[in-house]
Structure formats: structure tokens, C-alpha cells
Image (cartoon, rainbow, N blue to C red; front, side, top):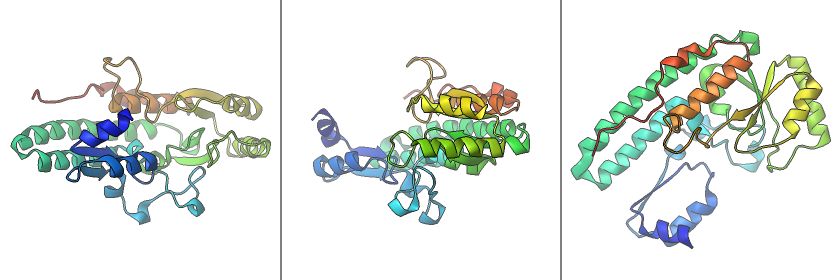
Length: 255
């Protein structure tokens, strides 16, 4: 009920889209004001031909992998879409929104370049990702990595014994140096798979759970990406020092 009340009062409702928040979208359409705008970021960032279907998001189920924001250029586009929506709704403050977006996308551009540089330090044969939650498809495509497996099945249950055995065999064949679990979807099976395959197990990747306390400098999207990439690069044999110059704090003009 509280969510319905918030949605009923909103002028702008921002969703990731790509069928990620179907329940919220239905609730928004049922409760929002007639003039309220529903903005689906993902649907306005990529075309259907750019969708990724994979381990947890198989094509036969019809829903693409929705984790576009893990690729920094797509996050940049998200910021621009929100700016444009705010300018349309509040033209009197258009310059304020434009200035803030200009500062923020400049930070995202620096982040994008730093991630690319850090990933390139990983030996090419080791630029392979095995994750629990399947949220790095667009990240891998952007930065020249390969997602060879995602452990969590498409129905978001725990993997079967056969699934685990298949992944262990694949890890051995691919000679993957590390596998990654998720802060958002904790699971003991990743540790078990890592031990059986004889690879390093890292359990701190995030896709929407910001690091640090609420007011900490790193408690931002940029901070999350820096922490993720630093963790990946170090575990896979690279040097993450290109990220050292990235200040994760949000940058904005005071309103």
C-alpha cells in the first residue's frame, strides 16, 4: 500500500525496463496520475537486436538480460534519459539538470576508460567470468571479457547437482583462475564449486547493492563499479591501478 501511494503521487516514475520490474510497472500503471510519465531506461537505450539472452535469461523465456547499467556507456545513457525527462517536466530548471548531467557523464567517461585500461592488464586467456548471478553480460561485451557460465539457474533456484558438476568440469577445461559470488544473492554452492574445481572463490561482486555506509564516498554507482572491477582484475591476475584516480563521489551543482 505504501508503494502504491508513492507511485500515485509521482510525476516521473523511472524503471530499468526490459521486463525487470513487471510487478512495479503494473502497479504504476494502475495507480499513477494520468499525466505522470513512466520512463523505461533500458527500452530506450538498446534495440531488440542488442538484447543479450544467456544462462539465467534464456531466449525461449522471452526476457533479455536486463543488467545494462553494468556497462558504463549504458549507464551514461540512463543519466541522459533521466535528464531529458526532468527537463521536459521542469523546464524552468533545465540548466540545473543539464549542468549536473554534464558533470556526471564526464565522471562516467573517466570511469569507462579506467575500467577498460584495468581489464586490459588481465592476461587475455584469463579474461573469463564465472558468476553466481548473471548480471555481467553487457559488462563483458563492453570490456572484452567472456562470461563462460552463470551458476544461478533461470528460475533463480539453487543449481542442481548435474549443473554444478558441469560447471566444475567447464572451469577445469577453461582454466579459470577465480569465480565470483554476489552480495545480492548469497549462496554456499559457489564456494563448493570453487573448492571442487580448485579455483579461487570471491564473494563480493555487486550489481545494485552499493558499497559502504549510506553517506560514505564509495556509496555510489561509480563506487560500486570501481569495487567490482578492482575485485575482478586482482582475482584474474591483472593490475587495477588505473582505477586509483577515480573519485567515486557523486558530483553535482548545488540547486
